[in-house]
Length: 329
Ligand SMILES: *[C@@H]1O[C@H](CO)[C@@H](O)[C@H](O)[C@H]1NC(C)=O
Ligand SMILES: *[C@@H]1O[C@H](CO)[C@@H](O)[C@H](O)[C@H]1NC(C)=O
Ligand SMILES: *[C@@H]1O[C@H](CO)[C@@H](O)[C@H](O)[C@H]1NC(C)=O
Image (cartoon, rainbow, N blue to C red; front, side, top):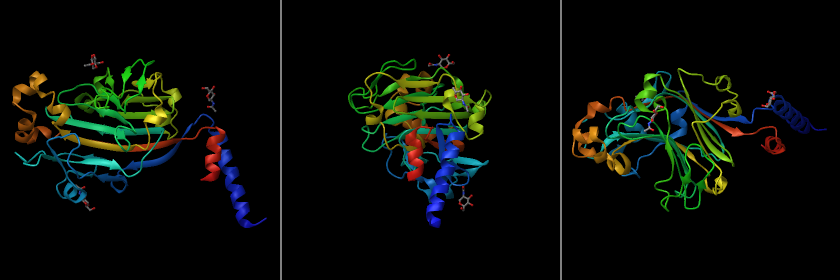
C-alpha cells in the first residue's frame, strides 16, 4: 500500500469519525468574516444605486481615506458621510458584497449596531442571486425612515408563493415582476434600527433549506443560543423563528440560488423616497426626501453598521450525501 493511499484512508476515517460524533450538527462552518478579513472577502459596489437612491457608493480607497469603512471596536464599521452638506451626487455611503455566493446553509451575523431610524435612510442586510429576480432575494434586515421593526421580505420571479406560513403568506413574485415580493414587518422593535442599537444589537440567523427559508433574531439582552457561541449551531434547538417561509407553490431550489451577501445604507430612492409623503414626521421636515438628506448631514452620524462577524455554515448532517461530499472534497 502506498503512502498516498494510507493518507487518503486515514483522512476518510477521520472524516467519518467527526461526522459520527456530531450527529445532530447538520451545519459545518464554511466561511467566517470579521475584523480580521472582512474587506478581503467583501467588495465595494461602485455603480449607481440600482434602487435609485440619493447616494454615492464609494470605492475602497475613498471609503478608507474618508473613514466611511474600516475595522473599529473589533468589528467591521460601514458608515455614511455625515459631514457634507448638499453633496451633489448623493450622500456618500458604502455597499459591500461578498465575493463568494451560497445556496442553502445557515448565515449567522452578530451585529452590534445598525443604522438608526432616521428620515431618509434605507439600510439593509440581504442576499440575492444573479439575473434578478430569477435567483431570488432574501431581505433579512431592512427598513426605511422612522420604521421601528424590520421588514423581512423575499423577492422572486413569478410563480413562487408560500401558504402555510405564520409570518407572511403570499406571492414572492408580486406584482408579477418581484418588485413587491412577499413578507411582513416583524413584531419586535429590538430587531431593527434604534431599538436594536439600544440593547447593543444581537444575532441574526438565516436558515435556508429546500423546504423553508427562516430568519431568527436573538437580542443581545436575551438568550443567544449557546450552540451559536460554541460555533456548533443547531437551529432545531432555537424555537420559533421570527419569520418562516414554507409551504405553498414555491419550489425554493428553483427560485433561490447563488446568493451573495450584502450590507448597505442608501437614501430615499424607490422605497424611502417613495413613501416620504406618507410619513407625517419626515414629510414635515422637508418637502422631499432628497432635500432632507442633502441638507441634514449631522442626522446621519448613527447611520452605520458595526458587524462583529458573519459566519456561513454549509449543510452537512449525518446523511450519506454529507459524508460523500467530505470524501470527494
Ligand atoms: C440529537 O437530537 C435528538 C432529537 O432532538 C436527541 O434526542 C438526541 O439526544 C440528540 N443527540 C445528540 C448526540 O445530541
Ligand atoms: C485605512 O487603511 C489603513 C492601512 O490599511 C489602515 O491603517 C486604516 O485604519 C484604514 N482606515 C480606516 C478608516 O479603516
Ligand atoms: C413592532 O413591534 C411591536 C413590539 O412587538 C409591536 O407592538 C408593533 O405592532 C410592531 N409594529 C408594526 C408596525 O407591526
